[in-house]
Length: 119
Image 1 (cartoon, rainbow, N blue to C red):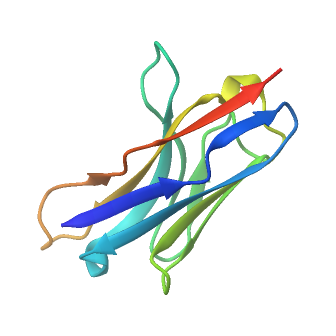
Image 2 (cartoon, rainbow, N blue to C red):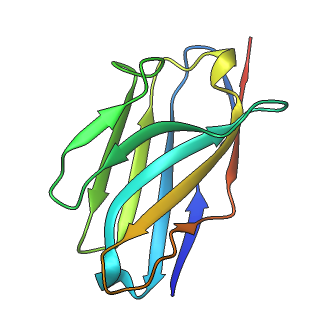
Image 3 (cartoon, rainbow, N blue to C red):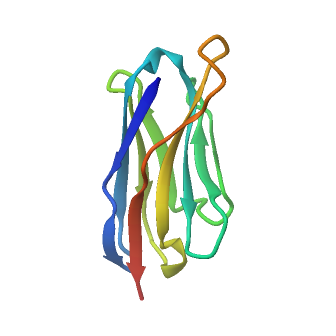
């Protein structure tokens, strides 16, 4: 079992910045790729950014150049630095952890943190 707790969301003006954190606990040795997803009202959940255990990253086109994903494996924490925020970035942001083979078939999600960007 892996538990994920996000923090760092809030209200910010257009052009502002926020840093999200996701603290993992439990069977953290099982975690491989981690990612940030978001869901805006009336829309499906979408991938924002993803990072492998080795540090390889990929981003949604809509956030490239503005968001940076990183992880501190020693602290079992995932981060998302969000700069130049736009109103269309408003959503609930979720942390997700994939687990390696042999650790079960479940992926794990956090409870989400609200990000609101005012125009």
